[in-house]
Length: 188
Picture 1 (cartoon, one colour):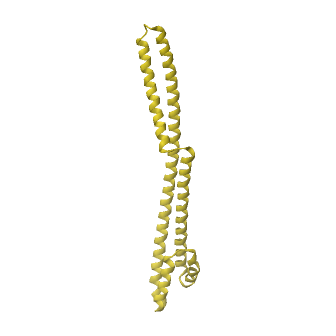
Picture 2: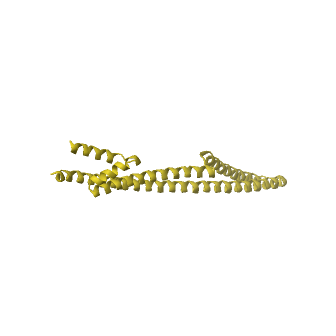
Picture 3: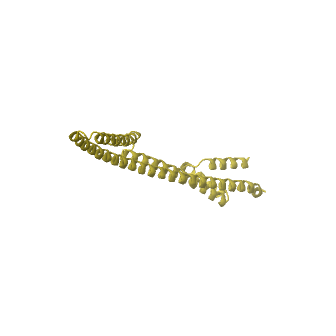
């Protein structure tokens, strides 16, 4: 009966990893071999590190979201930039078309020169609009790439922490099994 009570107490201590369990863990450390207590401490530290990494990742995601908001990058702004590029292409095509019409109407020289001047203005406006739209797209793309890189780094760090925590849990379980296996020999 004393053995069962002891095992139940150890099982409860190993299953819960909270600050309220620390005094009990200290008492168990005095009863269990020091190697088992170290493994439990490693498992608790790994769990705390995992939680800290998850919190860090959440803060990073929030920061990325805030950066998108600060830079004004939204689905609407990206669509607007694409619309500006399409409009610039349309204006450029219209300018080319107007220029062709002007060349065809050389008989009316005064009208042709006026149309040509309009074409040049339209082409300059189109080029300016295209340059502005391309700059906006480049800025949005760079910001998105930065966010994607940050997310990939956060995910890789979280995966590494999870792997480390899993390895610590495996070591803790192995040490617990070794301690439990050694326990009948101590009583004999």
